[in-house]
Image (cartoon, rainbow, N blue to C red; front, top):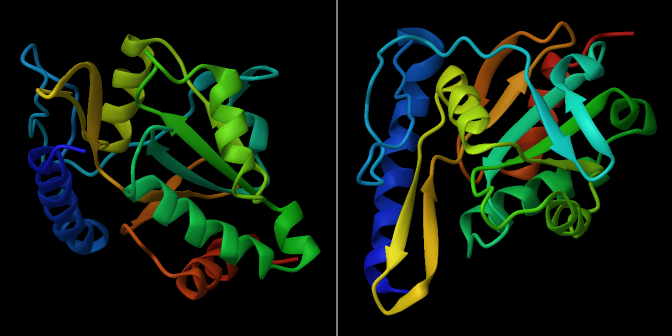
Length: 209
């Protein structure tokens, strides 16, 4: 991968990571469709609203509201991601394996691609299956994804690889969004949250029996 692309991803992650520390209290959030030049913009200081959405998985359409009654963790990324997505999903996978069966039954993890150009539902689900955490891969049209990303405060931008005209990366924020059993966005967890901290968050926010 081009060193400039790596640096760009790291800097974006650092920026968003810093924002994550402010989110629960100061309600400060970057939000994010991509402009005509392919660069993300800071367009809002409002706390992201979250909300229901419908996207496509390998078995058809799924809505966030389909999982009402469960705690939902949503991660936005893409399958060609060299390191950030594998790190976060790997930690989620370790955490998932540490849950009781009842906790697994009351949890759904969604992996939403911000790279609809390459991530088909089939590819997404194959990728999600590597992590053995009952992850559901979802995608949609660019317009639909941009609208959802803005509501959740997700930042992403396509970055061409100057050394390979047919290749590109997608810079993206790396939060894990926590949605309660009623579909309300509660908070966001920063990139590289440890498996133990994922388990602690699941136990904190999952509905009590």
